[in-house]
Image (cartoon, rainbow, N blue to C red; front, top):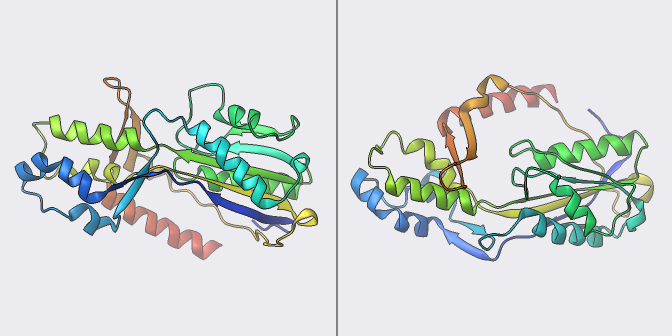
Length: 255
């Protein structure tokens, strides 16, 4: 796909205040590490992740996205009445319905004529949202749009740690499925896209490529635990890595 008239006008991030290191997580899991004879430091060593950040307990993603959208619109310098779309592209959302994007839009000051909706697709929500807005701009439907997303990973990480600490059947093999969950953090970001006619940056979005390999859809699966209301995720990290590299190679060749 190629775009002739789309520009990236602003990219902003809105990080959480609380820092949690990989060392702190392993300290909390010390009884598990000792029982399974796992070496300390493996979490950071195998992932390169020294720390992650969390928003305060109980924070709704929409409340952070409201802040992030305002930051993005302000940084872009684009007048509010130019916007024709506001999309929310997170895994995390305030509730099943209405769309989290509705609350974010209500606080944004953007026009009522905006397309307002959630775009949820695992880690790809923001990128998918960028393409949807870019398509609308290229087709002449809108002149500017913003995609925002906020992930609140505290529940997944803390829930996973509690499960590991209370699972007496855990082995060195079975703990691998929970390993990726311990790398998760929180964060918020937004991207403003505009038609080139109103762009102040002229930072063109040239296009992209899309390719799927959905046969591997079950390598990483997450859901809310009915016991405590916090999410859990099982990941075959090694298989996912190999499948992802193979897919990226094919996609790059076609781009």
